[in-house]
Amino acid sequence: MNLKKMVGYKAAEFVKEGMTVGLGTGSTAFYMVEAIGKRVNEEGLKITGVTTSSSTTKQAEELNIPLKNIDEVEKIDVTIDGADEISSEYQGIKGGGAAHLFEKTVANLSDKNIWIVDESKLVETLGAFPLPVEVVHFGSGQLFKRFEKAGYKPAWRMTDTGEKHVTDSGNLIIDLHMGLIEEPKTLASWLDSLTGVVEHGLFLDCVDTVIVGTSEGILVEKVNRD
Image 1 (tube, one colour):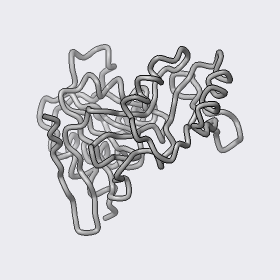
Image 2 (spheres, helix red, strand yellow):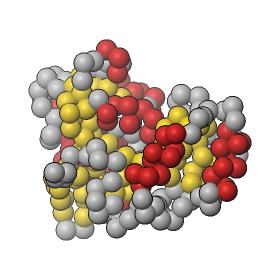
Image 3 (spheres, rainbow, N blue to C red):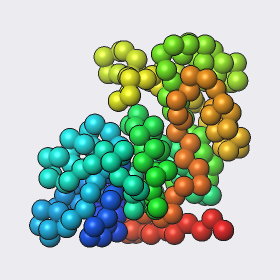
């Protein structure tokens, strides 16, 4: 069993009867959704899923997981999702799958957030993974220039066919190749202040549990932010 599948199936054990569960997006979250689908179909587990992308919606529907739109629920008990980088201080970068806007919306409505990763995603300091910034079309070129002037080495997220990637919300993504993000909270505040920026991939002070797949087995790390 590969590491992504190991942690995905382990995370599904945290889902309890009657929960409203945020279902993440990506290659690791795929296995978590698969495992929850098995519990729904084989154990009769009754939950409500809230998805973070069209791809996860399609997978969940195929597995007969009952779903609700995020606007139809009062809150979410737990959201389980992957991450592209997790720092030693349990801050994260997400959005490699271009779903970070929906993922952050769901995460912010959740009582608990669980991240599932293999050990390659653990870093001391964020920044080696390009930071996704979702932007509206109008004025996006001006934002690109602003990121260039700041020295953030921006690049448009492109499709395999050479076109600019369009998110589920119809926006574009600029990836910032910063190498090192020494002050993620300062950067997040600045990005939040820019007109035309819809959302970015810095997920700060939001995770409660990290499940890591390693060559030695699975580690479950509880995050204490006191």
